[in-house]
Length: 346
Image (cartoon, rainbow, N blue to C red; front, side):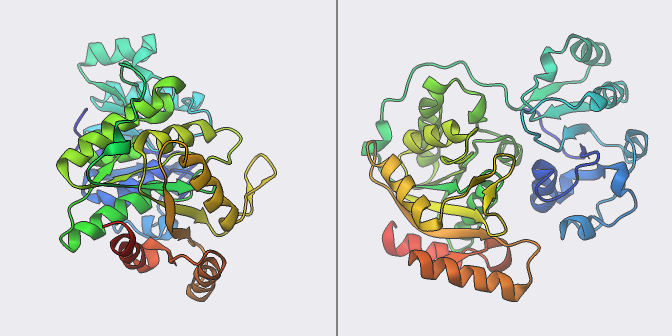
């Protein structure tokens, strides 16, 4: 792991809640570690105006402007479909290395395996951290969590980018605020950046995904009696169902929180309808059951862009449809989800 204390985050042309998840989450949760965001298309705008939070963090138009602020690292702030380094970003990365910055990337493209980038980093004496570089597999899942002590909660989603990491992270912080020890289990690049440990599960070969999740969850349970696992993908997504299944079977959750973006009815790019919340609850519980009986204990909606009244109406609709507590954890906190945990699991 590579520490960073003042990062410049590259989000050129993509800064937004859903288009630059890594950038948005770092601004939300560790703003003191963000010196600036690089996006020439939004230069001069308020980060508050673009994301709805972030205070005085500047949006600059170029790497040269960022270097004036003396960052220690350049972080790739997006996770594009397929995870490739945008061609136009390669020179920015090389220039950042020349400027003495460490490079932190959550892309599927391993920057540390690019001969030109690697050689430039060696000459300048800076480091490259490819967050998604997977560990060497050491076996398949043993189903050890079926007989665990402690409890596991997993966030699952109706689609990608539905707030699974945010809900898990917010839930752990809320539990800690009331004196309940819990550990966040990072399974993606942004969670790893926030916590300083974890594995990007979507880079692990399929046969070994469940084992990696099993190992991380056991490690978390050794720290606290409650592990909150960050979900990935979606079991109903045409491209990203595999990682969702591996995490479900690997961590053997006692409870699941279903995350859904209330503005979506289809999976973008596929014209595939998102199943109803009721159908999704049944699907997740059925898929988990052969390994470990689990149940969905709450609904976490993403209602960004909606008025307060419209968001409240969506929450009420979700509760009526499912009979489960629902909330938007950013608007209204995790109180309903915590009460469901306390009544059903803790």
